[in-house]
Amino acid sequence: MNEIAPSELKKMIEENANIQIIDIRDDYVFEDFNLGGTNIPLENVINNKAKFENDKKTVFICNSGKRSSAIVRTLTVKHQLPNIYSLKGGIEAYVEECL
Image (cartoon, rainbow, N blue to C red; front, side, top):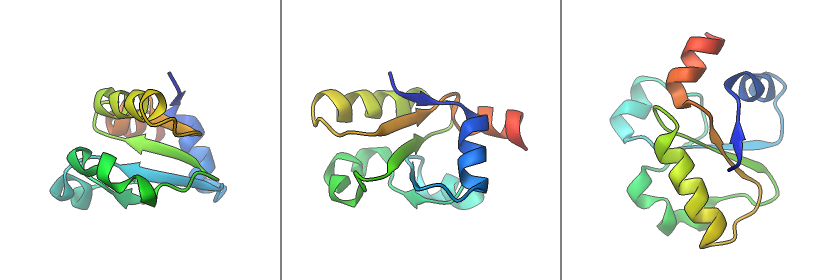
């Protein structure tokens, strides 16, 4: 499973690294707090694969990391998408460790 630690993501954001963040939480949750990136609710991810930038490390984010881990597994196994990661522990872990 491809996961990225909250501290690693924070460093990449601060350094303006060549990454793409896709937040799979519902719109209203994304609007309340987010790390930037693109909001594509989970139920729309598969239909929006064309928005993924395969030349960048793509990090999927949800609240706890469970749904983002599941979508990363699906995209890796069924759709052979490269260079995709789940934020370990999700937004909750990021807030606890990095803010």
